[in-house]
Amino acid sequence: MKPKILITRKLKSESIAPLYENFDVDMWNLEDEVMPRDQLLDRVKGVNAILCILTDNIDRELLDAAGDQLSVVGTVSVGFDHIDTAELEARNIKLESVVGILNESVADLTIALMINSSRRISESIDAARNGEWSTWSPYWLTGRDLSQSTVGIIGLGAIGEAVAKRLSGFGCNVIYNSRSPKPELEQSLGVSYRNLDDLLAESDFVTIHNALTPETEKMCNSEFFSKMKNTAIFINTGRGGLVDQEALYDALSSGQIYAAGIDVTTPEPLPTNHPLFSLKNCTILPHIGSASIRTRDEMVESVVRKLASHL
Ligand code: DGY
Image (tube, rainbow, N blue to C red; front, side, top):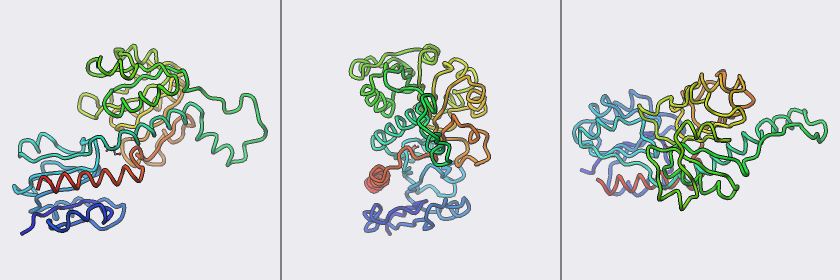
């Protein structure tokens, strides 16, 4: 009997083709729809591997339903806050995720959000489309420059590093905060370490790239925003859970900070009547950080390879 793999999302058949010869593959077949939990709990029974994505909650209940033969879980994401990793470890189930593939795409989008929020691009597109463009006007839709600004990167992992590299081309002064200073990167990237308070006080842009853990959950709260400059811009392409969204709303609507660009929210999708959508100085994207065709294909293909080689 071939080992069984459950794939919880409809993925491109060419990307998963390498699995068909040696494995018994069960793939959810509705495009862009999450496999309902009851189906997941049913179809996971007896599988040797699960290929999931970040909308699947891989918890104790699911692992119990799968059974003892489950030996590997692969997620098409770099983050794994949707997976109970302690439970996986306790059961000796290997976790495979995406490493080193999406850094450049997410860094590109982080820069895009910085420029969008500082130069008010979303607002400008709406203004042109809505007939508000009457003439060239010296002060209309003026914003702030990314060039020559001070950018604070919180979390200098692979994505933070890729952001820092890009910022050197903009002549930015890049400062960073992480659990501990990283002297080896300071030289090569031209960045310098700050404690969190100093980083927030000095930065014209603050971009957060920490993983979501119990320690980092809602770390961007009212105290955090109160330490930022009134002219500063907040960017989040990591996880919505890092941010206290009510505090972000208050900071943006009161003028405590200038603007925000966020690719991730809690929940996802963010309901369209959420107060953050009512703010002109808040740009919200639907979690597209890694959504380039090449990156998404490589993400799937790398997890497929890892599962096959594990099994
Ligand atoms: C990840 O991989 O964790 C991203 O958020 C998906 O783009």
